[in-house]
Length: 150
View 1 (cartoon, rainbow, N blue to C red):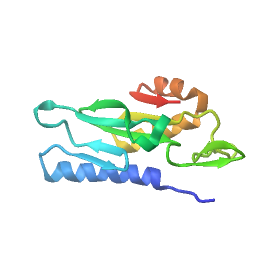
View 2 (cartoon, helix red, strand yellow):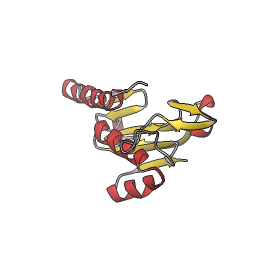
View 3 (cartoon, rainbow, N blue to C red):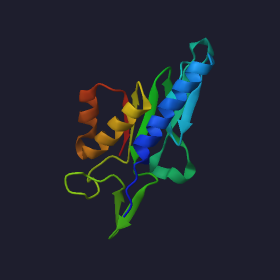
């Protein structure tokens, strides 16, 4: 078994990199660390950044299931597209339920959340995974833009 605290660390690093870039340059920038990303501001002419969410139904093709337009803020995705184990023929996500220590049951394959910071987006996407079948209701109650693939 291995515990990986890289999720929140990576999201924090994205936020820090975006803040540094915003301090040293007026140029719009998008910081992307493995799919967790943040913008410093919209592109020239107030054009949004176009970001693809990977299609989990066939990750080998590396195609987007959806394109999102992002003027400001951040996106983070949690899911089992690339990080999972198979036990007794069952695909189990890498996210563990803190109540029992076992992989979350009934979770979506992928949850992407837009928020003001990457750290916030990552926290919400992972919490939605932990809500399993209730992921959509949780994110609706939080009032954030989100995209879920099951």
